[in-house]
Image (cartoon, rainbow over all chains, first blue to last red; front, side):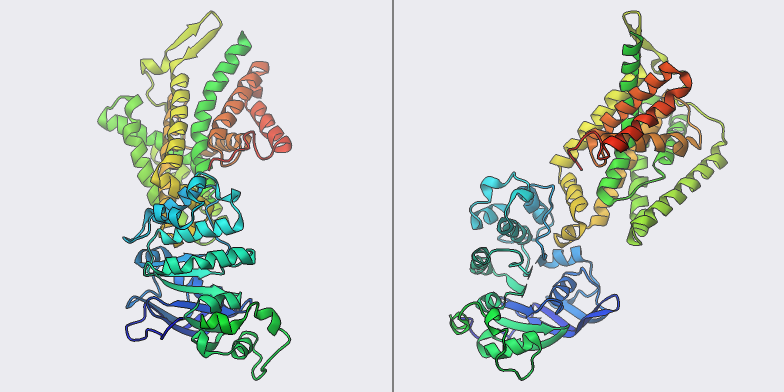
Length: 264
Length: 290
């Protein structure tokens, strides 16, 4: 049960009317969002909807043309990515982006180099992922995709962030591996983290999210708690099929029973 | 026995070439900068040594204790300002900027030190003395010292890169600087550290060259940069120990070439260089140790 949205306090992360261009292309068009402490905020959308651009701009890797980003009560719009990391924004980038010539442990050590104080240590990551300790001295290229993803998550966790940004965790991974990785999320959340995730796999996102926002061609098309939106609404927002209750693509979108996954 | 002597002298010369090459290789491996001013910076290191010895009267062999830190600081500052500004505008811009830097340095040296060549530590007994093994082989102390220094520098560099915190950061930034930023790493600072190391090693090389030969404002590009490039390519780009192997192969080829015909010294080196490019373009060492 996801419970009521904790909107009493101040948001940990706030994005106001963010517009981002890639050259001539407008990747994001006045997108806003407010993420409150302890939430799992999911951004869904099709390829090219601007999800990754949004996450990368929040992390500081893109400069917005307009709009503001506020983190923990301070504006960070012009702050360099490494300074944002120091303030508590950590990102697991799309495609994992591990340091290939470094070992598993060295990757984690890089994440811990400028870490904030907090519960996460390299040892704690080894406890979370049981297999990792005995393979600590292997190069990351020798790991499977799912194992690499786990190292990428561990590398972000050891920085002890307040907000963890997860960009397409499921990309290129077998469904069973994706489920296992998302299954770790409650243990990660228990340490007081806030999660903002981007996911193409909508059913997976709905299963874990406490709040949902759908992007289409750089615009927000739907926002709400997973239990408050219907499958039809999500589908229409995802594909931009306004007014279409059911579509031929419906079966592909919902790999599981949405009602049960949202309610549990 | 003449050949054995040549090979030994060639190997020892290779130590000097490795000192020239390792900084070039490091800067390319970490920030993808081909530093065309690398050879001129060696000459600058040599001239700074002349100045330091004149002013402080430190023994020539110990002047590196002062010269290397000066050049390292210069490397950090140049990387954080000029070279980083060029990098922000694209990798090709760094070629133009370092080429420009090379022209500025050469003309600056000509202006202040004239075109006359100068030796470093001429008259020092150690620099000119040697010992003999048998009747055919004579080994001078200076090339032997330079070779040992090169091995010590490479060992130290390898230890630093694999074992230390900043070495780890350098390798991580070389792999993926954006991912490093997400881990809170200021890659520009790490680039600065890598440049400081590169400038420190090339200063050492410039001093070694000044002791074993003569310094002149234009030799940076004419001689040193080309030999450094040849050593890097022969050994394998981005490989630390490859620069030593490349330097040794180049040195041996040059001395054997000189033995055949004294005019063929430089030519022989470049024939080996071209042969490696044709038959083994990745260099003699495959293992990458960035």
